[in-house]
Amino acid sequence: MTTALAIAKIAALGGVAACFAALAYFVTQCGLSARDDRLDDLARTGRTRSMS
Image (cartoon, rainbow, N blue to C red; front, top):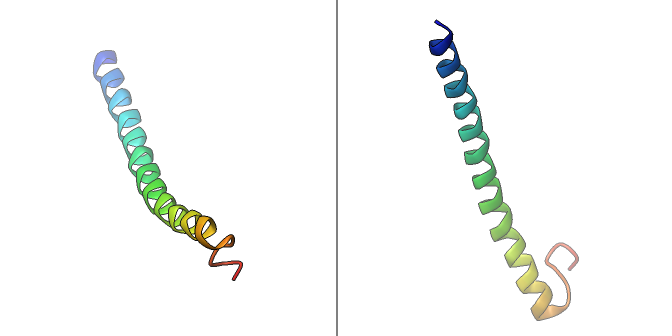
């Protein structure tokens, strides 16, 4: 029983970790693409869209 419990606990932790990893992946993908656009604007014009 303890082995099954340990396996279930590891699987649950793995599921939580996978969920956080997926969330972090999406956040960084969206955030980085937006930040890259702002950095491109900053490099080109010396200011970002939000400042203009």
